[in-house]
Length: 87
Length: 355
Image 1 (cartoon, chains in turn orange, yellow):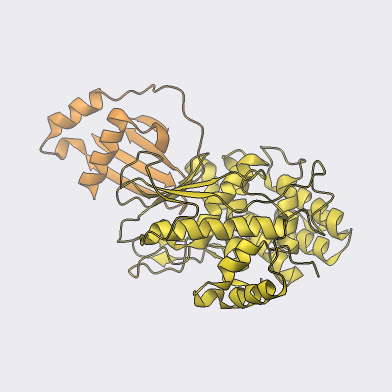
Image 2: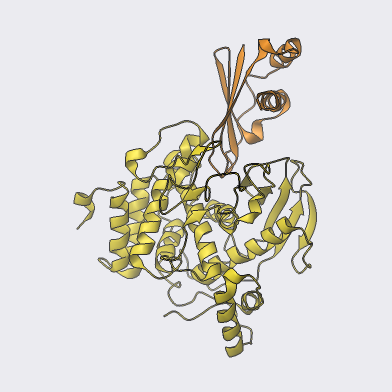
């Protein structure tokens, strides 16, 4: 399973993209435990704040768009992990 | 010519500036201080005392009250207070740049537009530096300006650019005035207004005319490894950088290149290139200092009360033309410059606007 994280916005308006093939990771089971915890229906989105990032995360035909202020808990862990591995 | 309404504290700050880029402003401030060292309270001066003001009132503009916080590379806001108004320089360049940048931004709004801080009621200016780890961004969170240190590879610290500091503070001004919704065309206008006033802060602080200015936003933020001058060019959107790591500056310079996307709240940092260029074209067509006529027209539009939070490009074009007509006269050089600028960037059509 592939995870794609696309970060847009920020004052620079630069789009960055990170991809990870979860099943190719040595700690694949650990990734899946984290993925199982992801809340796909998070509480009401926060109001947009000027120049903050917007994250679009896709995996297994599911997609979620989260404002930077809403990227918390398991979602934040996932994005940090994807960035770390993809970088 | 309009009479100077520069408050003495600003003149002293300017007069003592050691920055070579500030030499002209420093000399002017020294001469102005020599003429009049008594306290002058700033009020609505000639040229800013009518039409645009929703209600007539005379309010003294207080000196800025700035507080800088340090997030110590966490994402906890506001962080620890490291410099309050009146405190000495801390030696931390980010703190100094934020403090000074707030001062220059406050000065533009006070001197050019008679505005008392972000809310026109002397709101204290709050800023947090050293936000996050390798954080490549700066933002306005509704109450304060927040600056990252950059990752050191692509970006340096975000306080390094005065236009970026002005950009963030201008988001506060927009929030207290037109409150443009941060999505789609109104979001791109919100972004553009911040770039406009960010550029004007830099030009005003350097005493730079529209013809002499770089019209770059975020000059000096990239490290030497990046092939690029700045984040954006208002003069030539799409040309600010062209780099192996970052790609090419994706901003359109006219409606022909308008970007339809759901990313970045509908491409607010991309399509802002279109109204940015309209402002640049207006300013160079009028000539002189951009913060005078062109800046005044945009400021009148932002604060005039006729603008809706969901305002689109075409409506904004009409409102700026109306503001120019109201202040400078129908068919005036200023009015014509605005009308033609929006035609050039393809927001309005020549046939319908060129009366």
